[in-house]
Image (tube, rainbow, N blue to C red):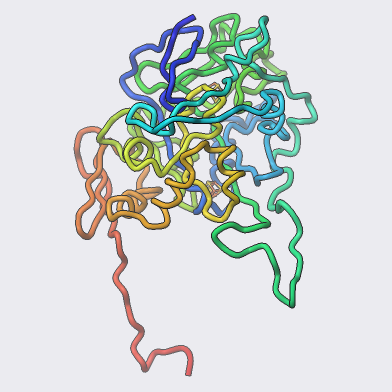
Length: 375
Ligand code: SF4
Ligand code: SF4
C-alpha cells in the first residue's frame, strides 16, 4: 500500500500503488448548463468503438437524466447507500486543499477486507435501458393561484438535468486497484486508463470496484472493456469523439496538470468546474460546471463543497472565464494553451500554433426599421 495525496479530498489516503510520473493527465470539463440531451456524443462513441457483437449494451459515453436516470440503473445512489452517511469536508481551504479536508471514508477506506474497494456488481437487468427516466423531474409541479410552482431561480423546486458520463481516467483508479491480473494500467503519456485484453480473464473485479461503473463485461470475449479515452486520436493531437461531436459545445478537453491548459485554469485556478463524487476517492479527471437551477443540497452531494463558489463564478464570470468558455467545442485540436484578449479567446496547439480564434462578444446587429418583421 502507498500513501498518496488526493487534492480533491485535501488529504493523504492509502492506495495499492504509488502514482507513476505522467507527462500529461487526461482531463475534460463538461458544462452541464449547456447540454441539450441530444445524445450525439453517445452515438459518436458507440459508432466508433462499441458497434460489434457482444457490445450491444456497452455505452462508454452515456448521458443520463438526474435525479432518477443512471447507467447502470441507480449506480450512484446504490454506492452512496453502501458507503453510508459520511461527515464531508472541514477546515480552511488552501492551495493544496481547495475544498478543505474530507473527513469521511473513501471507497478504498470503506473496502471489505477481501476487496480493494467498496463496490457492487450490477445484475444484467441494470445494464438494459441506458436512458431510463429520460427527462423525468424530481417531482410534479403544482399550481398556486393559477401560477405553476417549482421553476423560479435560484433553485427550481422541481428539477432535472443531464449528466454526461465517460470514464474519468482517475488519478487513483479503483479498477486498477481491484484487478487481480494487473491487466489494467494507466498510460504515462496521457493518464488514459486501459484494460489489456490479452491479460484480462473477465473476473469483473473492475466492474465491481469502479464507483462510476465504467468498465463493462463483454460476453462474446469473456473480458471487460472500457472507454479508451480515444487514445489514437489523442496521439494525433485531436480531442475524443464525444467531445468533438458535441452539438451543445458543452465539452472541452485538455491536460489537467499543465498550468498553460484551459482545463487547468477552469479546474485548479478558477475552480468553476468540479469533480463528480470526489468523496469516492479515485480523484476523477472529468470535471463539471454544475447546473444553476438545481437545489444546492443535491449538488453538494454530487460535486462536493465547491458548488456555491463555482456557481457564483459562473453567474458573474470574469473576462478570462468568458473567453475560455468560448473555446468549448470550437475546435477538434487539443488546446495546450490559450490567451484571452480584449476581444477574442485564442487557443494554441502543442506546438504553440494558433488553432482557434473566437470572438468573445458577437457584434450586435440592429435590424433597420424598413426590415422589421413586426409592425
Ligand atoms: S472511472 Fe472507473 S473505469 Fe475509469 S479510471 Fe476511474 S475507476 Fe477506472
Ligand atoms: S452531444 Fe453534447 S449537448 Fe448533446 S447530449 Fe452529448 S454532451 Fe449533451
